[in-house]
Each structure stands twice: as structure tokens, then as C-alpha cells.
Length: 363
Image (cartoon, rainbow, N blue to C red; front, side):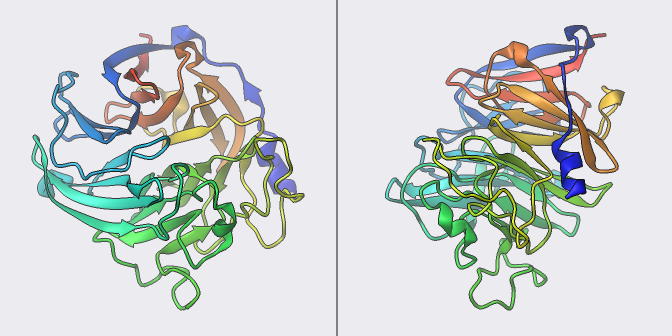
């Protein structure tokens, strides 16, 4: 277990002096913004959890009317419109992907849709995938997406909160990652293919609620973060077909303080690279590749809700060796962190009057 202890012992550093960066408010008045995508013309698309897609033009102005043509979503508690992601050929095709909750309080789950954006609205919308079974409640949906270099798409899912034991059941999609073709099909090398008791879309299982996902092309690694219960938030490196243990292993306890499991690790399960106890409630995640902050090159940035911060994870040869707390001065739940084409960081604050914040060098 020596390798694991090196990950878990990453020391925590103080935040950068405020003189090293400046926070700029780009847009205010967003209702629980959830995700951000950068358009080729310099504009941005932002999702709002209640079910709206908003356009920020290249001049940083928020268009008053939401983008038309967004699918109907189930919006309650944690449910709603989640991620927006541009297709690899977006500049030519105008295609983008949306993840969202469908259904009602008694029967709902996470869906993946695709539509064409023409600069004004969405058209030719289609549903590519819906997680099953539909479950009761309005918590733990996942909803983050990442593209892999083989032009497949990984979608994160949650365990539905009240259904945590189903994260160990490969016969459904609860508490898993799924890997799909860009048309929503099943890639012919998915790891659970050939197992008649498993869903063919599955890529990994044993997750609680995956809220951040990043593909590191230089290391060929797919990394995710996920919420633990009371403590035990995790950073994981994804291996196809692996089982990450929830709820049979965890570094956290239930919200009542009751023990969920006596095991922090077991031989059959892949342990986390890093865990946060007490919980910071990780949300988005970004890998820094840019010129604006040379010292951040190759570092991971994890936004946090309960922690009201961003964690900078400094890595050496793929290992997290230090952590740094940033942007606590905002005093806000931070839902997402992104690296823009300009090399700046962009943050979304998770409030009824949320904001899009840009992080730029101080000079």
C-alpha cells in the first residue's frame, strides 16, 4: 500500500497571494450555473440547472433570452440541466451534447442528448442515451462528460442516493461511468461486453456521484472526482472494467454518523488516488494546459461546493504531491472550473444569483 499512502499524504499548502492573480466577474445573474463550453468565435455557452442554456457573446455580454430548443428537463433539488459539451467537429457541424435529468420525482435518471446550435437556438435534437432504471428521488445524477481520443464519449452517473447498493450491480447504470460512441451507440471494445448480466454501455462501476472528469492526453489517463458521504470524497484514475468499491469501501461515514462499511479498501476494488476527509464536495475538474500561468502547467484544478474553494493538485509523474487552496475569497460554492482557450481559468458559482468568474494574472 506504499503507493496509495504517497497519494493520500499530499500536503496542503496555503493559497497563492492575491497579488499573483486577479478575479474578474464576466457575467452575473445566472441561476445555479452548472457547466461551461467555449465557442470558436470567443463566446461561451453556460447551462443553468433549472433547464436553461445561456449564451455569453464574444464581448462578454449575456444574451437576455435563453437559447431555444433545449430538451425538457426534470428540475428539482440536484436534478436539472447539467453539462454542455461541443462535438469535436463543432466548427463544421454545430453539434453539441447536453446531459440532463429526465422524468419526474417518482421515476427519473440521467439522459444524454445531442442537438445542432446555429448561434441562436438548438435544432435536430435527439436523445442518445438514458440511464436506467428510472428511480425515485432527486439526488446523485453525475452528468459530466469527457471525450476520449478514439472519439468515444464517457458520461458520469450517480447512484441515486437512496439506491447506493445498486452501484455494485452491473445490471443497471446506477453509480457508474458509461462509454458511448458519438452517436450514442456501444463501442465494440467496451469492457463489460460479453457479460450477459451487465449493461454493455458500462465502463466502470462502484461510484457514488461522479462530479468531475478529465482526460489527460499526455499521460493517457482518465481521471474523475466523486462525492463521498460525510467525508471520503475521492480522486480516481479510471481503468476500463474496474470496480471502485462504493458502498462496500469508503473513507466516509453516513450523514447521521453511522458507519456505512467497515472497509476503506478491499482487494477486489480499485482504491482512490486521493481522498478528502472531511468532505470538500468536489464538483468540476480541469487540467491546466495554457500559457497564462506557467507554474500551473499540468496541474489539476478541482472546484468545491461545501469547501467554497478550488483545490490545485500539483502532480509529479502523475502523482499528487501537494494541494493548494485557491479562491476562498469569493466566499461562494464553486460548481465548475474550466481552462479557456486564452489560458485563463473560468469559475461558475453555484447560487441563485450565480456568476461566471475569470482568473487572470495580476500583471
